[in-house]
Length: 66
Image (tube, rainbow, N blue to C red; front, side, top):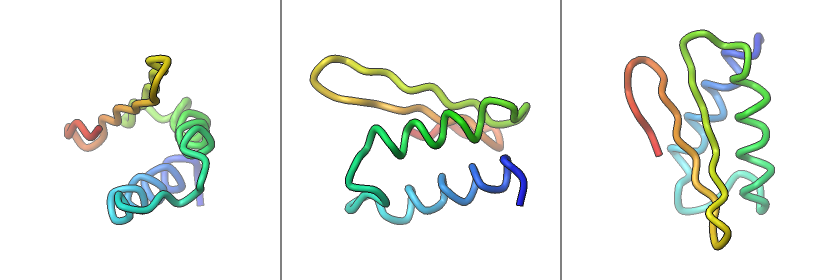
């Protein structure tokens, strides 16, 4: 499985389990997505730390997810 497929799999898992994180550490999930998507041309992921919380935005298949 290549990085793109792993990223899409993790995105799908995060979408399906929004009420309970895959990892108890949200930062770890966001860091994993950052690593997996950094070389993908059709998936863009950015994470932001607002001091009191983390947020991630994913754009893939021309759809924005947050």
